[in-house]
Image 1 (cartoon, rainbow, N blue to C red):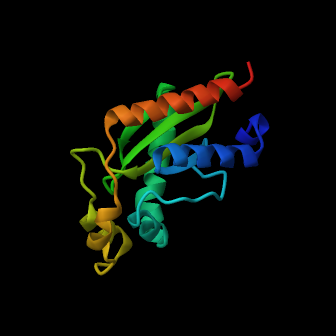
Image 2: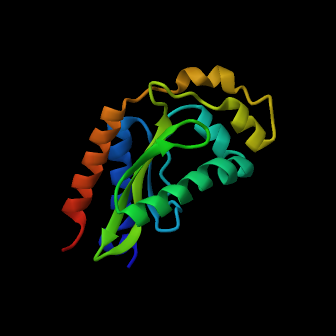
Image 3: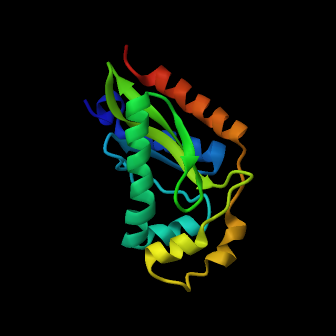
Length: 165
């Protein structure tokens, strides 16, 4: 079974938009391999599109995080809240149907109150040091663990309402 067997791609995309409107985080639905299923993009900050504009950034930061979150949520069957290697807070809620792991819904792109954007790591991953990241740090919002937990609960409620019995 695939995520689009539950609801059409347009409804997953609408859900991503609703999650972004609530959180202003990069909201995404991923399949069980950690790959996005829609083309919807709305950025949480100005650093993420810089990372995503380089294949090296996607491979070293985003893909690694997505695969880790997919693996952890599949294994634990629980939401995971952590930071990616760039320092951004990220959460993922697993999607299961009859014990089959189908993917995750989550968000990223803000920092926790004690977090820090890892500009040095980002520049090394991309292979450049004049990306203007320091000027873009002001666009990164802070999010509390309590607010992330509210988003996790919102996603869990949505999934409970759409998943067939």
